[in-house]
Length: 385
Image (cartoon, rainbow, N blue to C red):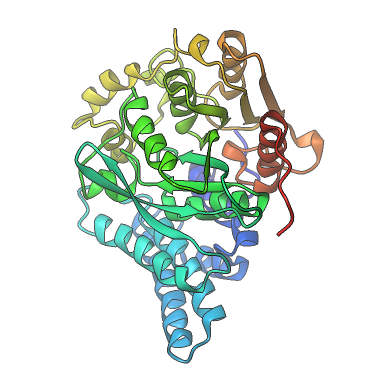
C-alpha cells in the first residue's frame, strides 16, 4: 500500500495521510491551501482522532472568519475562497466522527453552509437544487457548463462512501463545467446529511434513486436527454455500473475505481486489521457490526455487468489501496456488455501521479482520461467560453 504524500511517518496513520492527499488534490480548484494544510498537520497530535477534529475545525473557523470579515467590506474574492476552504476543512474535521457523536450533524451543516455562503461570489452560476425521491427532497448542486448554449451533455455524479457534495464541486463539478459539461452533485441516499439528518442509507439496487434523478435532469431545458452520463468514485464504482445496467437513458459511464464485490468474496473479515468504522455500517443501514457483515454481501455485480450496453470507462490507480482494485477492473472488462469498454490503469512510471485511490494525488490525470473518453464516445466537441 502506498500513499503519494506521507504526512506522518507512522504506517498506522496511512489513512490520515491519504485524507491530507485528498485535501492537497483540490488546491488547484480553490478548495484548500497548502500552507493552511501544513499548519494543521503541525498542530495535530499523531493518532489522536480528537486532535484531528479540533485542528481541522479550527482552521475551518479561521477561514470562515476571514471570509465573513471580507464579505462585510465587499471583498468578494477573499470571501469566496475563504468560505470554500472553510467548507473543506470542516469536511475533514468530521471525517472520523461517528454518527452518535453530537458534533457530527452540526459539522456537516457547517460544510454545507460555508460552501453555500461562497456561491453568490462564484465566477459561474451554480444552483442549489432538490431532487425528489420517495417523498423526500435530496439537496444538491447543479453546475451548468461554462461553454456552449442550449441542451448540453450532463454528468450525474454519484458520491463515494464518505465524499460529500460540497467536496465533489471541486473534484468533478467545477472541472466538468470548465470542460463543457453540466454536472449534478447531490446528497443521494447514504451521502452526508441525507444519511445523518434524514436517516436514509444507500441501497444495492441504486437504480431506484438513479432513475428519479435522471427524470429530474430531463425536466431541465439545458440538459441533452441523449447525453446524460454517470460518473462516480470509490464505493460508487459499484453504483455506477449498477445504475448504467438498469437505467437505459444513461449514455456513458465512468467509474474511478472498481468494486465488483463489496462483500466477503473480496474483503473477508480477516482483511480488516481493525473493525470497519461505524460510518461504513451506517452507509448501508447496518445497526451493528454483525449486520454490516451480512448486508455488505448484497453489493455484488455478478449477473449485472452483462446488462450494461453504454460506453464504459474504468479508471484505476496502480497503487490504489482498495483490495484487488485492478483485478476487479479486469473483471468489469470480462463481463460488461458494452461494445466500448476500457480499463485504464494509471502507473507511477507514467510520471504524472494519479496512482492512489481515486487518483487523489493528481486529479488532473483523472480529468484528462474522463473528459477525453466522454468527448470521444459522445461525439462531443465543446465550444469556446
